[in-house]
Image (cartoon, rainbow, N blue to C red; front, top):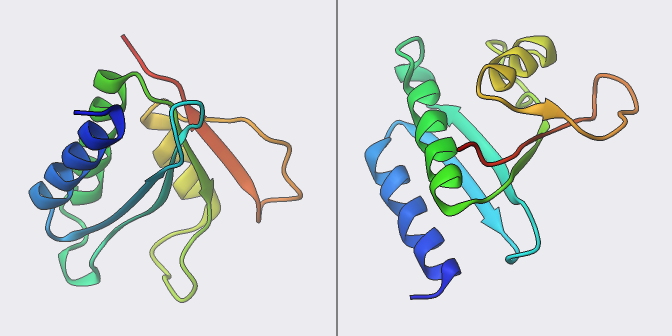
Length: 116
């Protein structure tokens, strides 16, 4: 199986293990980081650590496959449970670090290199 095929199958397994978490990952190819486009717990299931568990599984997958993860910190419009500072702190606990100069708090890009 190709690296992309392994990645696709593993992502589907992570998504299936976390049915109450919206999770969207994109990988453009072997020389690119995987983009974490969305991770969000459905509103009626919040406060149970579900997104934290899903992100743990995503980072474990990236580590296992040797893939870099990248994301842009953007609270979802209308979602009053999140703000930039809270999201940055949450991603930082999962070893994401800011990597790109930002044009203010509205555009923070974070990245996580594979861990051994």
